[in-house]
Length: 182
Image (cartoon, rainbow, N blue to C red; front, side, top):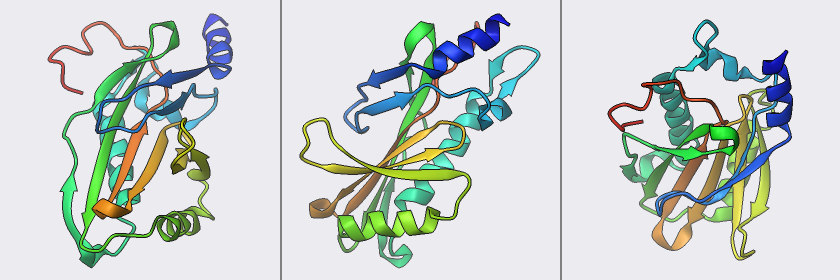
């Protein structure tokens, strides 16, 4: 009962995060009850499988950032580890990013439209366009069914596409952050 009440309360919250220079600032939404996040949680210990969560997010980051011309990819920047950011109620979320450099600069509108069309019939993802807090740039945000947010930015002048992610918020268990690598 208390767990369901906490989930209900958490479903109503949103947290503003500031991510390191390689990440895009964005809003991380608390995950509503009933989404697919449970595949990462051991029901007996309530422990999140951080390595599986990170692995799946990084796979999606790379897929979203490399939807352009595959033959035109000249570089990939994908840090092996991410950052744990604080959420409300002492919880955390995993954040990371993938940047793909292309030989020829992708045009932002064409890239966003490509991603939207690729995901149009998906039951696993939904897309929305949002403007940066200063209103100067547009992001394409992709939400996964587990509540992970992927913000896509096209840097046309640098011929790069960056996907920054922030997972749903979860509770860390004692000892889970030992070693400092996430």
